[in-house]
Length: 114
Length: 113
Image (cartoon, rainbow over all chains, first blue to last red; front, side, top):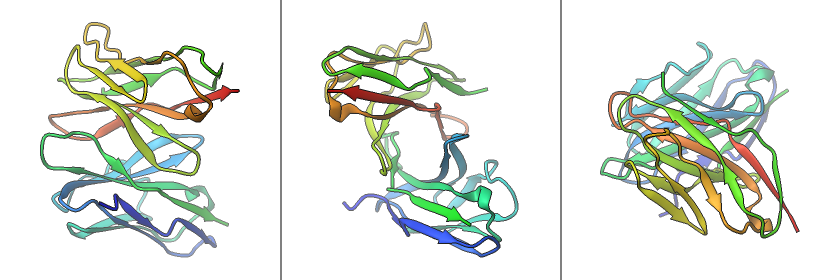
């Protein structure tokens, strides 16, 4: 299995631009999580989906952030418009539906907003 | 509320030294507990886990025991190597209710040759 795949690995964009981060979870996994990691705040849960349905988006910082999961094999996190304070590493993780409780993380997308 | 508290870093050790990274948690119900490791420029990787009280998780020489009475899950290794230098995260997963992971702030370990 290729694991959780995120793209792009690095993104540099100008303030005000729209940014879309992509995630492909491990096949067969039914839960998907988006996290943001910064030095100041550590690892923050932004949103998670179960069976493609958003269950908890209380961590989404503001309306500029939105996430979708149109099917079991794809999710996006969009920031519009982006701001310098959004600069961080964004991780996607997935978990399977049976017994096992560990989440598997992607390599992350390092976002820099200038 | 549910939370994870782990010792602040950085922790600097010499090669072959004994490692302990403390982790305590607060949770409703009976969470599963994890240690994840993050190497520079990479995502988090599962290091070990324990799903019920008194379980011991182990991997690559690392161990941690789920202690319900002290709500702790301390990470230990008898003899660290330079290659163990990384950031270590303690986490819990709530198996009822919200079904989400809560992570500690991470502890950076630096092992010197």
